[in-house]
Length: 394
Image (cartoon, rainbow, N blue to C red; front, side, top):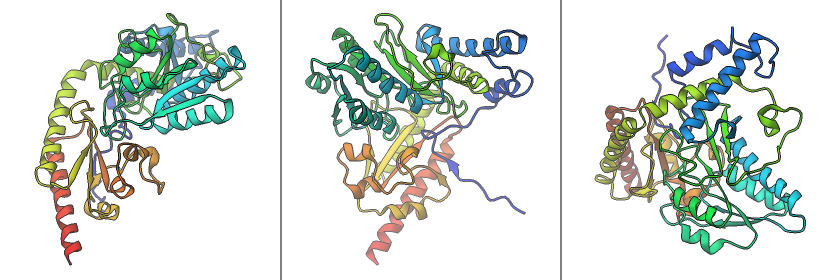
């Protein structure tokens, strides 16, 4: 029986495969090194604890922070929840009678936007949600105009998961620090792809996920600054002292080891892999836009991730994509929004109509993407649009 040929993978912004070297690093911690890192009375626990602390140091080195500032979670969604809700509940205990004010962007991931709204409805926080510009970028000027006397947190993602736009994080962070306002950034898409220096960028709280950098799913990190200033969060869970009580529960040792290994690998060839991906990205963008004038490139033309290309096609129905792009595994938005009938909130935020937002495809480029894959993708898109024109004429 012949196995059907799998489509070419173009959804690296949604998730990445665990690389063989990362998997090999993880394997012992499923079997012979299976100890609980909190069990420090015997060698099984010591071995697991050493592995966790090694990964913590690997990630701290990548972020240029102290290892004690790295807290392991199940992923960026949990980290974003803990950052925002953990802060608002802490502030509520400290500042009774004074509602804290948070600033974020309409282009953020839903694990920030919806959590901010939850902080508003359940904990009484005041929330300002800034509209990004047509490229999906947030400016420092917009933030400055939104600040109030009770502003306690600014949360702006480093790079957008749907359209790839990179925000001026260092500029925002430094200004926030000058105003004694905490700054949180969601780095799920940018970690391992862009240099991140929490000191130079004046980042106070940061979220990331392992499965975006060829590590395993179900593991992530929350960076929480311990000095200048010392950031305090209240835990969302109770029942354990792990991760200094901020995130109780038995640690996912194999996942943490995999995240550490994936981090080291990402840093080892970040510049060379970025240049390779930029060449692929340029080829895909020019190949589509030169042949299809009705196509629109979403996101910033230059300040964008090398892994992301998002096109919208005016006059096309979303149904055409399912028929015309068979053989390509890609996304019509973000993976977190798939399965819903609503158009992408990010595409709506940059001014797209519902129809145009639905006539959008996102290509995620990654380590296994080749020029041959890009050429096939261009041919498929052009063929799809030509066929759709013929159908509309008939």
